[in-house]
Structures are given as C-alpha cells and as structure tokens.
Length: 412
Ligand SMILES: C[S@@+](CC[C@H](N)C(=O)[O-])C[C@H]1O[C@@H](n2cnc3c(N)ncnc32)[C@H](O)[C@@H]1O
Ligand code: SF4
Image (cartoon, rainbow, N blue to C red; front, side):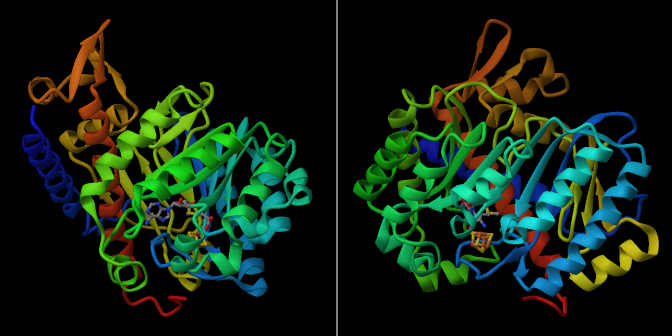
C-alpha cells in the first residue's frame, strides 16, 4: 500500500477513535463503586502532585504542598480500605502522577499498606528526575519492582523549552542520575517523548544513542500527545506540532532499539519479557483506580473518580469511595477497546476476534495485520497504526479530564 493510502487510513482511524470517545464524554450514569467480583485486576493509585507544570502534560495534578499531601494520603488509605471491603484483589499495583516520589514517606507507607491488605506481587511507580538519587531509590528496594523516570529528552535546548532544564537538570546531569540508579531495583525504566515540535532527526538520534549507552532494563518512547488541554501551551512554548515526523521517528526508534530492546509493546521497549510494562497501556483491560482523577474500567463500565481535592475528601468521608461518575460501554465498544489494547501490543489470538470478523478482514485487507500460527500479528504498518490509535485514545481521554476539571475551584 502506498504512503498516501496509509496516511488516509491512519486519519480515518483517528476519527473513528474520536467518535467513540465522544460517546463517553457525558459520563453521567450513577452506579455503585467498582467491585472486583473475585477477578484479579490491577490497582492504579494516582498521586496528583508536582512542583511545577510542564507545558505538554495533561495528567491530573495540583501544585504540591505538604499540607495537601498529608490530607490526600489520609483519604487515600481510607479509599484503599473501602476497595478492599468491596472484595477486590490485586497482584499488581501501579502508582502514577504527578510525581509520586515527591511524597516519599507517604508513598512508602502507602505501598506497605497496600501490600498488607492485598496480595500485591509487583509494584511499578513513576518519578520526575528531581526525586531520583541513589539514596532515595535504595529506600524503595524490596517495595518497588519497577521505577520509571521521566527524562523526556537529553537535548538541553528541548529541556529548556519544556521548562525542565532548570528544575531537573541538563541532559548530562539526567544521564548521570539514570546511570547511578540503574541496577538498584529490578527494573529501571526511562520515559522519553519524541516528536517535540522543533526536534530534529539528529536530536532524536542523540537521545536514542544516550538511551542505549545507559541501557536501563526498559524504556517508553511516547509520541508527543497534543490534546485539547495542552494544545495552546505546546504551541506557545514549543511551536507548531509536526504530524509528519511522527511516523518517520517511530520507525527510526523501532529499528535503532531492536538490538538492545528485543521486546516491544507499542511504545514500550524491554530487554526481556516481564509483566511490568508501561503505566499508560494495560495488558489486562480491567483495572481499578484510587485517588483523585483516577479512572476504573470494569465489567464494561468506566468509572471516574472525583477530580477536585475537596470533593475527593468529601466523597471518601461520605461513602468511602470517590467514584463519582460513570458510563457503560456498549458491547461493540468493549470489543474495540480489547482489540486496541491487543493490537497495540502487536498480537492477539485469532479466537479473540469473536464478534470482530469483519474488522479482522478489513485489517488484513489494508495490510495492518497478518495471520501467523493462529495468531493475528501486526505488520510494520499496523505497528504504527495501532501505536497512533493508542495515542488518539489517550488524547481522547483528555477530553474527559478537561470536562471533569471544568468548574473545579482548586485547579492548581
Ligand atoms: C504522568 S507523567 C509523570 C512523569 C514525572 N512526573 C516527570 O515529570 O518525569 C508519565 C510520563 O508520561 C509522559 N507524558 C506526559 N505527557 C505527555 C505527552 N503530552 N505526550 C507524550 N508523553 C507524555 C512522559 O514521558 C512522562 O514521563
Ligand atoms: S510531566 Fe511530570 S512534572 Fe511535568 S507536569 Fe506532568 S506529571 Fe508534573
């Protein structure tokens, strides 16, 4: 298939995902808080605090203060107890933010607490680079299995325009931090963003070379996501978004990293197979989220927690749960969501396409997938198509975040 048709299909996919996400913007159904029903799900805990806001970031967050964090973790503990009382069990805990390590003592106590009430075997946590030192990471030994650090780029000019140079250090300083902590925990992972507006191919190649030199166990290389929340700040601080480079850069990354990181799942790269991948895309489609602004997806229902810190606290005080809004997915949407997750990861069993045979035939026709040993695997075009589709999905989720933040009194 030629480039022209490939690009048309990619655009069509983006529209398709947007269309589906828009159906969930009016999450106004009321149902009881999600209860695990004996299923093994994963637990996501959101820690929404940062010391500053980066222009490209749309995650739900507030400016850190000790008082806010002290209050927040108190309610979080109550919420975890409530989730436990509903009969949920978890083997995997993912802690995202924000910058969870900002609240190091609270974080450690929360992980210990979650491990004491659930049979959690794997913990993944993220951090900005300011919190990263040999000493702080050693404190996480035995508690955290995977720590992902947001480097974003080693390019000083890009760090400056993203406001991160002064706060988190130069590219060389970031590299030194990663070098010092790699090997302390079972998995160190580095987050890189590619396709910043003014990023050149040479700058990307330097990021890739530095990553290979540091060689942490995992790396996530995210395409820059420009959503309704961030489009203005990205344009003002960084310049116009360039969609054309994205595909080119993605294929360069794939090729350059295949030796160091033979296992790839969407935008995540690994040295060897583990069940700890990236925070964004879950290999199991169902999860429960705790904390302000977290989502849960269970039994075909999307649950959305309170976004404002005040309402979060009030809701936990009132009923133990912060799940405030919801929306049921249609049967077809659930199938599409499963297919997006599966093909983003590169392969699905043929039997998982039950109810999606026309879609499978269409994907084969456009050469996005092919059949191999009873598996449906993505082609190089499909790899990009589904990586881009996942990006569109997360951009779409930002529309929900934007809507939830409307009218909040504590926006910062
Ligand atoms: C929730 S953020 C937390 C990272 C941490 N607070 C930091 O600043 O290093 C997790 C990761 O999401 C990625 N991310 C955030 N905004 C993004 C965007 N607009 N496009 C692509 N990736 C993004 C970044 O790589 C970031 O490290
Ligand atoms: S990238 Fe990290 S530090 Fe920057 S605003 Fe997002 S969560 Fe906060």
